[in-house]
Image 1 (cartoon, rainbow over the protein chains, first blue to last red):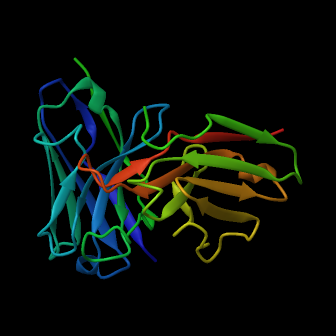
Image 2: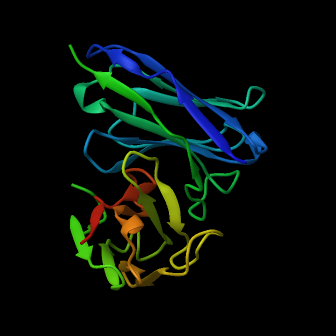
Length: 123
Length: 111
């Protein structure tokens, strides 16, 4: 059974940093690209970032480009999101999601989701 | 403002058929697959429809998807109280601003 467990959320001041983690199990981790998707309180879903199965390719939403960095450690079956220069508008529940393909492709999609970790940016 | 446009709300009575629309453009729905996700209250999104009209195993055949041009629709027949949830469409976008886009979501109320 696929399991994705996010951690690392918390309260941080504007301008601060936070590192999110997603522990994966139940599948061969490096066979699949992975995503981060966020949801602000009471709002809809927003795609944040994507990394290929081998970690060699990444994509970011314009809203986080230059501030967030996605990475993965396939030896630890873990996905990460380093978030710097945080803004109040980054406050959201952050989900990691498993793709169905290893490379980044328009034929991939979000197949399984974790339960999310909450990030609150507030002074 | 979401790239894909969905009605903010929809409703129906048990047993009815309801449809939720998702409107996009040539760079997303017009040239790529559409996906639908169901988010029950307080839970993570769940894949409902993939590649326009395919259902993952375990999803009842009451749910169906279709696409035409730059628009897509999710239909739910035989509406049940447990279908009350938020529904989101998603698609890959060929433009430069990031590959994945979502609709703003539609809250379905079963009256």
